[in-house]
Length: 448
Image (cartoon, rainbow, N blue to C red; front, side, top):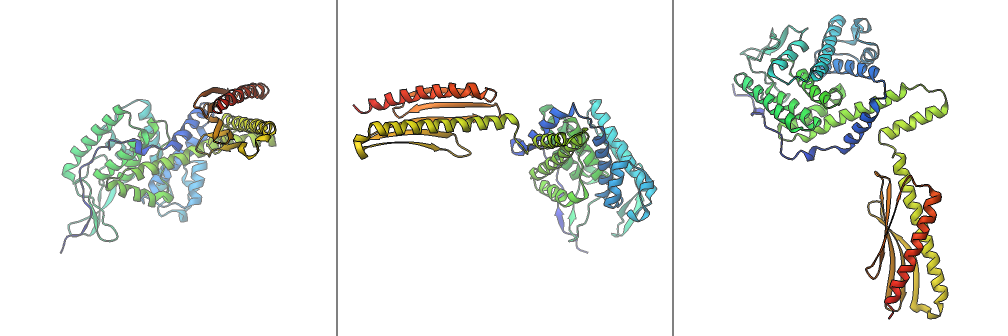
């Protein structure tokens, strides 16, 4: 018999690439900061409990440990893990066993939080403990004998594999994992590299993806490696202030694609996937907390809804809105004042006929500073007064710089979003008139 084709050949685990900036997700950073700012004032116990049950249920479903229909899954997440909620037709195994396995997963997750709280260092011993705990309800594992026949053998919990566990794909090609004789050394290297990353303060999302993938490349246990990998990634995320890694059954295809991309040396897809899953759970947490807020009137309901969208970054904050509004109003004032000045000049210099022209205009795009200009011309003598507007929405500041055609500077005007409009308007108009006076003086110099 010819040997089966190799889809992926095992190789020793590789360290992270040098450039970690490529993995940065600014949307996630923003949402995470919102969560950090809010969670101290919110009651998150109910959400955390539901997320823990969701993690405990889904991690078994995607590994094929049991099946569970969506309706029953929702009931268990909302009400708690109880076999009485699991109808016999909703799963492929005995409801009591399914409930025990899920409860085992939940106990392990609680242990992950304790592990982080105690500031323990990751070790191969702890990883073996995780495996033994996660598979507490499992005694046998499916394998193959020397003839390629499926057989069931005893599962040795917390012990590295003694036989290859390379899966065969639908196309009959084999995906190679670490050979049993190299597992111990590779696991030692995994832990050592993780500790180095910890000292370097590698971002949690990047480290969670790297650790998960490196562990799956080794596949050190005969069974249960997927559950252990997600538990290890969850340890990193919890330590970083994020939520445990919840991979749903609906995420399975993207999850596998991202892992296969990492097999080829591209970790970005897995980091991105983990980031999307975190954004999903951060969004749910913020909405859940808002829904728990007592609402006694329509106005309060509207306010809570507004705060949710603002918190999720789907509405700009009030400072940014006010800053943008101030900048727009100041541009309009400048444009109108320049227009008035152009009309007065045309009236007074009309005898020059077509040799003279004056006009006011606004230039700019969403991504570039806006410029308001008063342009002047007599024959070949051109002049201009330009106001360059820069609005810093994050800091709530508007900066206006005046520039003249001669190259001279007209100074700058600064205002903050908090300045009352009643004070801002006359102050800006006074500065603007001074700019016009100086600008006309600069233009006159070009006429002689």
